[in-house]
Image (spheres, helix red, strand yellow):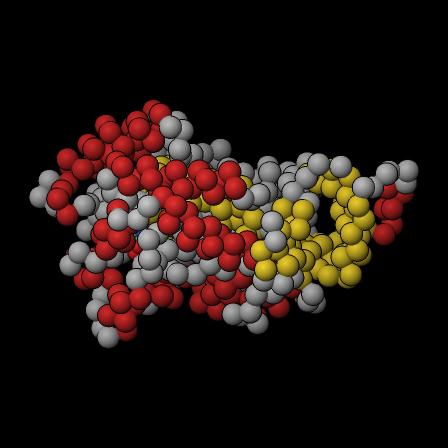
Length: 427
Ligand code: NIG
Ligand code: FE
């Protein structure tokens, strides 16, 4: 099956070959091409070029020729950190926080993650699936074509498996790439409050082996922070996970400088996410591993800082230190109920002082690196998945984050097929 996408006014985020990841000052250089076309064969990019390059296409029989009508095109976005399987929103906590309560205070009183866990335990798999599928459609309509989804609102073996089975169904039913992460170590269930290590043992000895026996997860994650899992407990979980072949991503330094980054780097986690609180030592550690095979990618989640009113991660300094930084929505009911990476792009620019070009790479190729998928998604090069977005804009890279709050994606293509148009999910 050969398709030709022609009439593209400008193509952004191209690469010479698969595997692009940008670090430090290189993050501000977006590779573009004017008056471009993309040739797609069986869902992958076969070739791309501009008007001076049309001879390549001579004699090729195209099953379909799509005129992109002078729209601008860029790679589909990669959302590397989400919690979209949840029972119901937490509007009441939202209002409590407006009235002055703190996120940690609500959590300590049995709200927060435990509130979501209580609700989720009462939901059927079908109910969870239905709501999560709706949320995934919102995300796709806003340009997300690769997503990571975490468990972590189950906190019992049965409910964690229920969540992961929902994620498995999403993976089967949706055309986009889905990566599943086991986050049993998201909070201590109330019955383990007096003996948190017993819960860590349950995660290691019961939950992870069961998750792996059903092949339900690609990754493991731990909320390593003040009042949640200690660096020692986190290390124990990540070491056990590595033996089972689960690669680590971690929630670190959201509530304080608590050793999460050190554990992430020690354990060769693929990413360390949140990072609202960083000290010199943390910056140094990220810089030391930047560009290595086993680098830990720092991921900022500005939706969470915006929604909770906490500091924004200092990605500016991490870029100065030569790191490849990424951004994600953290879409979840407690700290970041946002589905749109376009909104994250804008927050990164206005609040974290990333240039539009840097933030663009943070939601495309660098985000792909956090999942070690940079050879398949996140930039446009021969051999990569034909996932791209079309915008009826000029200078999309700065116009999208500038006109914030609007969904600018006119069409979303996954494997060369149109899956969303003007905010409507089609596939
Ligand atoms: O990434 N910080 C830990 N977990 C989620 C929020 C969980 C919740 O409040 O429901 C996060 O922010
Ligand atoms: Fe999160």
